Length: 68
Image 1 (cartoon, helix red, strand yellow):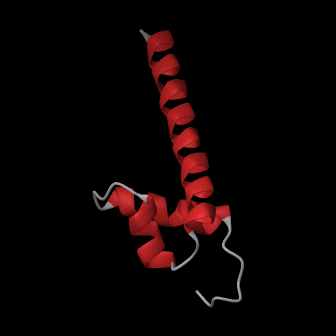
Image 2: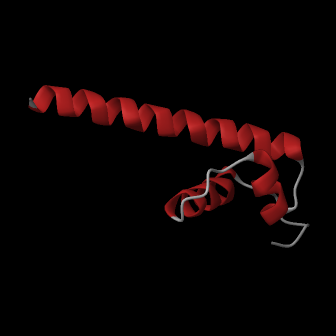
């Protein structure tokens, strides 16, 4: 990624998803090593991604309870 491009949430989330698929837990340092961007931006994006992952797990749990 060229340094002149703005780091978007979508870019960070995609990398988090890719990391998780290969068994790596996304962290600020791991993302920063890959993206080379500021910790503050990555921290905000990672927190948003984690929040969405939590919401997805809650929704999946609620659905499976309803199916029982």
